[in-house]
Amino acid sequence: IFVWSMKTGRLLDVLSGHEGPVHGLMFSPIN
Image 1: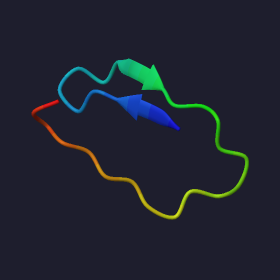
Image 2: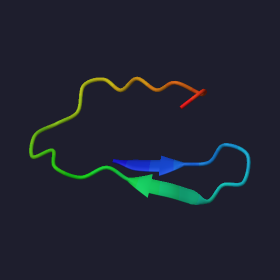
Image 3: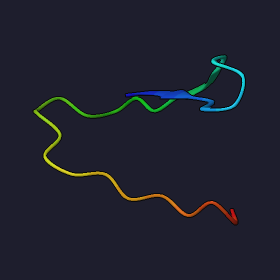
């Protein structure tokens, strides 16, 4: 999963470790 900045368009992080499909994702703008 690639996490991109909505403000700058830059790649912020890559979340690895998932072998199957990802059906949902939640984030908190505070953290």
